[in-house]
Image (cartoon, rainbow, N blue to C red; front, top):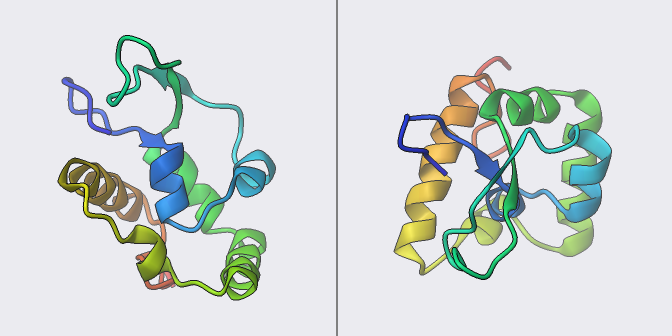
Length: 117
């Protein structure tokens, strides 16, 4: 999610598209670094917790998270590509923007590779 000032924030739906589960968010990320209005339910939805791309990149760079992701995908019998599939063009743009920001910070590329590795 990109704010008017150009700041990119990573939401739970974006994290899910990158393989994260609620348990992984709890175990590998700190408390949310902010809360932003829900773009789908702006008037009625609760604010969404968000994290900075650098925070997500740091978590994804840890060996513990990488091992967890591999096991989680195998257990769920899915792939990162399948998790990232969407027909929602608006979400696709937000996902691509967040992914680029995470990768810029040294996070993994959607295929599991890292720019640093």
